[in-house]
Every structure is written in C-alpha cells, then in structure tokens.
Length: 199
Image (cartoon, rainbow, N blue to C red; front, side):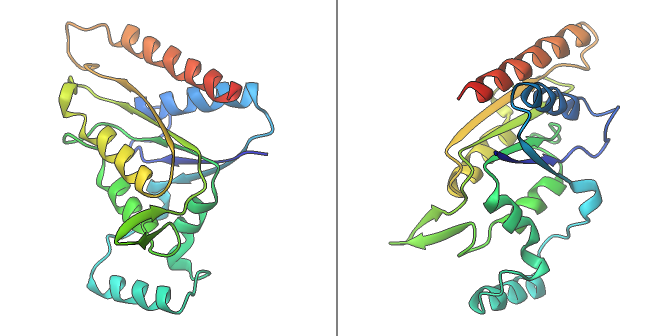
C-alpha cells in the first residue's frame, strides 16, 4: 500500500481555492486508478503552526540531542518522513506561496530525522520517491514562479527524488478565458495521476 501525504496550503479552502481544486482533481484521479492508496491530509489552516523563534529552536535542538523523536514538536516531520508520496496544493502569492507553507517547511526540516549532514553536505532521509505541486495564479508567473523552484529544491534536500508541478496562471486577467485555462490545468493534473499510477 502506498502512503500519500496531501498538504493543503490553500488559505481559502475547498470550493474557493483553485489550487486546491487542481490538487483534488489529481488525487481523485489517482485514487480511481490506485484505490489502495492510503491518504493522510494535513490542512495547514487547521494546524496552527507557528514560525520558529529562538526559544522554539533551542527546544528543538535539545529534543534532537535527546533523540526525543516522539515529541509533538516533530509530528509534522515524522509524517513527512514516513510518506511514500507527497502532494502539495498552494496558491501563488507574492511571487511564492502563502507563509503557512514556509512555516510548515521549517517544521519538517529536522536534523537527524528528515535530513542529516554527512561530510558537511546535507543528505535527505525521507522515503518519499516523488512529490507533486499544484498552484494557480491570477497573474502570469513566467520566470518568477519561485515557489515551484523553492519547493523542488527543499524537497530534494530532504530526499524526495521526483518532482512534478502543474500550474495555471493568468486566471484573473480579463482578456483570458479563466475557465479554459483551468480546464487545461485540470486535464494536466489528471494526466499526471495516470503517470503516477502506471509507475
């Protein structure tokens, strides 16, 4: 059985978020083709994760030194490290993605759990063989899709080997056909699900 972690980083939520709609279309297509997939959802709106300050960082280092891996502080990192596949849905905000996703990434970057330094180089410890990122933008992203590039690099550092992304951009430009652009992106999301199911 494949263990898939679905990270919903869409502040507007279901029924409103176009990025979440892409991620859900992918997931539903994948489950139809591979129904034995076990899905765990982490909705960042509900987790209430706080950015790590000096006190939290000191506590985390002490817990790492004590190898207290069952502490609640490592809950997100444990779930991430144990997943076989990762799916992230987040809108394009301010050239990247919402701050909640960056805070989540801070929480999963845990030395000795999700990565380790060997010969002064980071080596990922996570077992996920691939990840997919779904994002939408009201404006054109073009070369400024920094969220895609950052997430690819961050997950690679944690050991995630494959990375796919589906983007829909320019959705709020009045001369664009937003419905057609979304339909194209939804088709790409479902096609990606077929690729994953066949791998």
